[in-house]
Image 1 (cartoon, helix red, strand yellow):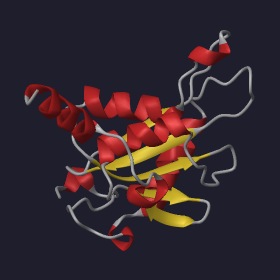
Image 2 (cartoon, rainbow, N blue to C red):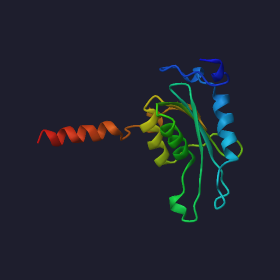
Image 3 (spheres, rainbow, N blue to C red):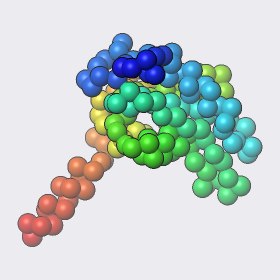
Image 4 (cartoon, rainbow, N blue to C red):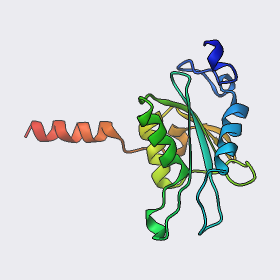
Length: 154
């Protein structure tokens, strides 16, 4: 890492939860709480993720008067990831108003699976867990590829 990366979590692939500076991720997630737009629920959420190239991506929830079209914080983080050049999420911390870890909703677990894979680590209320334990038997791009291959052989 360069001097510009000081204070950023380590990001070597295949690392463990101990290789991630969870305090830095949590601080960034907490900082995102101030940017959340949550006038309807009053429940701001912030999230930060470590990318395999060392970047930290972040997001916050953005509500809408048409409640069902609000965006979870993880949606914003994944948009930040993709807009910043992509990559693979290695570790994610999602927090509520008091900085306490929150479990992502089902839609967001799917986003984390697709952009982090089974080994992406998530700080949960029960400790750090890999996505393969949070979303067992997950549906992902490989399932779509397998379905296309089946169609091609017919």
